[in-house]
Image 1 (tube, rainbow, N blue to C red):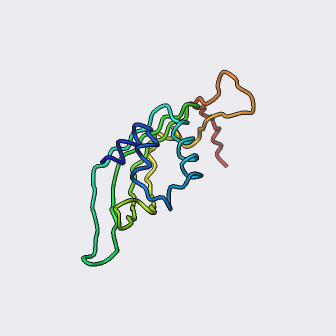
Image 2 (cartoon, one colour):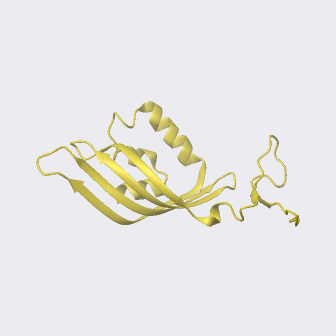
Image 3 (cartoon, rainbow, N blue to C red):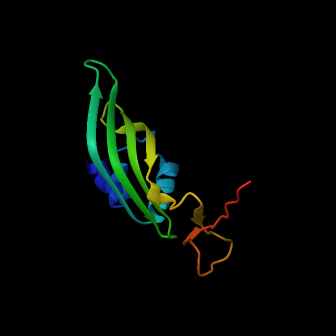
Length: 138
């Protein structure tokens, strides 16, 4: 739960403590910090956590299901239902992970819409746009 709190707080220094040095090297730290800083707000709310460990073995995984909501500073919005597999080292730190997501329909509005991102800042930058299509019968 500490990992999800640090992630939701956008606290990359605290988040770093949950990952192995092999996984979270200096380059990775910079990338994750930059990505977290691109968010106005992010929340990760786990609702199911299942630890897996084979007795006397080095197979240590944690499966989690969570709801995640991302509000970017550029106006983008994403909402996911995530399933993640965290692979742990012998110290209990994350050394790898995989993620699967179900994308909530609020992410993109209608299937015939999108967001405008152009080369120059204008008044509709990052706003949702809906494109009207004409249906013709043959």
